[in-house]
Length: 123
Image (cartoon, rainbow, N blue to C red):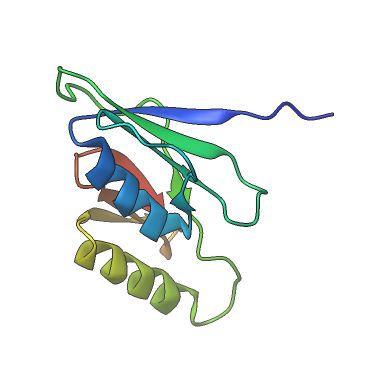
């Protein structure tokens, strides 16, 4: 039996970051969680892990050692277009594009930063 787990994240503005990631992942605020220094989002279908954001005094100082990837899914000739469209939507929500990654001449994914500078990929 798998262990249920939660991803915990440090944040300067936990509610802003939670709102960004809820939008990016299709999550919703955790019902009943009300804390001015923290926020939590959950998969509305109850399948994915909860993600919590806790206000911390120190800022981000280095590259993430672990990160979330947003998966567009599927293959086919329009995969790159779907990834780029999803990345554009995330830019509108507050993310920043860092670079494209290519493998053997083929487009792989887009590296991005969330509103607080945490790296993630759209693939």
